[in-house]
Image (cartoon, rainbow over all chains, first blue to last red; front, side):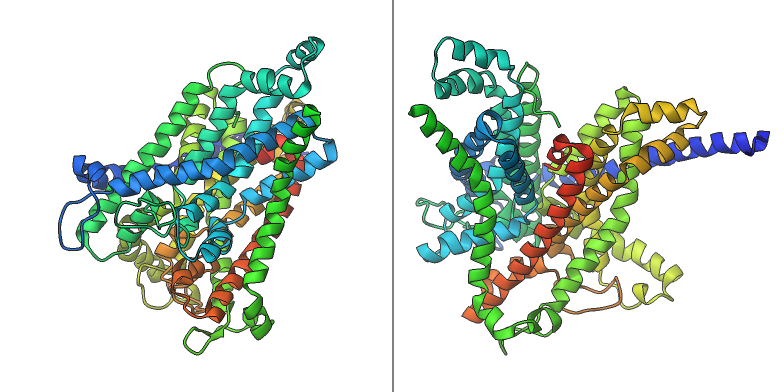
Length: 286
Length: 304
């Protein structure tokens, strides 16, 4: 074995060198976040005004206008998606944590993780063939279905995780009082973990709020208000996409504004969630 | 009675996950029936995509999807794993947390925003600075020959790389955290330096799990849609040059689905979706198996 002084120095130097390389990598990895946020604020801040939140888009050539319908549309779509994603996801998570047998649980978790990796555009096709084709038209419902399906695996996994944090003593104490099992789960376990469940749902909502691909041929987008959920509906990410690839400067400006608003919504949810997860039994650990 | 009902209800909801996988596969298969029948294997081996002549070959999209994903992996994997090493082995807790938070924020940025930023900030910079520079020094390689438009395979690869870095980093981090400390202590005890400990005791122990993290990143790269659609140029051609525009499976669906006027055209797009679904399901399954086996069930959760 080599033990010369020079070799020892080389070993230590190499260690320091690699440490520095790792530090540089960490900085390089977060740099794009800085670039994106910098340009979003620079190009978007000037374009966000009151009209942006209160007006409909204007036709090409007319300056001004806003994305009021797209902001509301995104909220409507999130609501519709939650109608599917929350009950299925939460109850599925309850099964995994409270009833499931080991083997079946493994398959369901595996399935959820795989679903999580299905490209979002594929969900668009599925919702298209399930909703758009039978209803003979693009609709808010179709967009909600596409996003709702995407929510299910996210909510299942977080719900299971927070329910498992509830100590078994709580369950045993409730059962010892003669409370039926389902009531014990709903009133004791789920109530105890409520914050965590809400956290999981909010995070899933933040994840799907920015999705564009599944809405392209389901919700389709709309330049006007949508009064009937059977009609196409606008969504913030869709509007950003349409404006970004358009040739008009004024639309580009609005796309930046829309992007800034969208990212603020998503970050606010994430920050709010962090505030929520301070207490016990609420931690969706990441 | 109520108990049993409740149990069945939750079980049905949990099983819906497995039902959904089957449903997606079946719906895509059903939709692509016409195209499957008419083109057979020709669909994935020919490169003529001509809606007017009703001739559909998806090879350029398959090529574009693989090429852009490979570029993204080459760019994203080394810094992601190095960052994970930094976070688990080197960083003091005070700076670890902010970096982890920022990586989570990066993961939360929607694809369409990367696309917007790509069109107006990244592409002009690539066109004016990076691409001419690359061509000047590496122009003798076919990869860097040809005219520079900005929108290109390489631009798509770069933006995908930015988008898959967070997932590869956070999974690698979970994997490295699952390496027992005893492993590290033993190596330190033998007088190893910090890098030697990392290389011998940590990285070689975690090799398969890290491979799983990379494959999961590949799965995400293959299905990335909006940012790629906005930056790749959308031209169904197989070109050697990274500066040439391309097209991917996901972006052809995004661009042409609403324009598909004939049944066979729509069916061909369904089949593109079927190919994409098949490939990503397979990649994800392999990745999840590797990750769960090495890092435990917690590790696969980091993928969200």
